[in-house]
Each structure stands twice: as C-alpha cells, then as structure tokens.
Image 1 (spheres, helix red, strand yellow):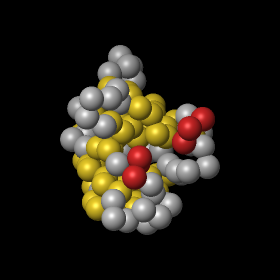
Image 2: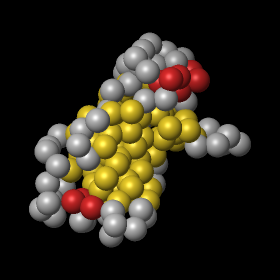
Image 3: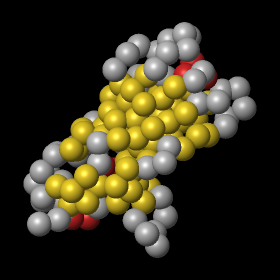
Length: 123
C-alpha cells in the first residue's frame, strides 16, 4: 500500500513562509491524485490543493493564488519515491492547522492519509 509522510510544518510569524513536503512510497504508480488538506480542531478537513497524475492542479476558490502544489519527479510506473510540495507564503494566523496529504489510487479508488504536520502562524 502507499505510505505518506508529511514534514516541513512549524511555527512561523504572520507573513512568513514554509514549504510542506509529502514523501510518497510504495506502489506510487497507482496514485491518480495527491492532495493537501488542512484541519483545525472542531472543524471539517478542507482541501488546499490537489494534483492529478497527468500534472493538472486543482485549487478551491478560497486557496487560489495562495498556494502552489508541485512534485519533484515525473509520474513513473517504477516503485520509487515521489515527493510532493506545498510552498506557502505570506502565511496568516487563520492558516494555522494540521496539514495532511492524501493519495487516491487506482484501481479501487482507495485513499491513504499521512499523519499530518502542524503549521502554527503566530507572533
């Protein structure tokens, strides 16, 4: 099965930047979509950015022009590591949340989640 490990979170002041990473391993050739989501305690998990296997990116309206999702290697049928990035600039206190990456896979549409990485934007 696919394994996902997030990193790059931390404490940053308003206006600061972070780059989140999601390392995917296992049968990554089965991944059809990789997405970043975030969740604040008591709230539902919300989508931040998604990238499809062909490279198309999808952003919710509230996240457009704020974040850019990318990956470091071409889509491959080999069992190698792929890392997905979410650079975040001009962070604001309401961006504080646990950020998760999620992989959707073929052929059964099964989804996998990472353990999450905490992002805190505060003075």
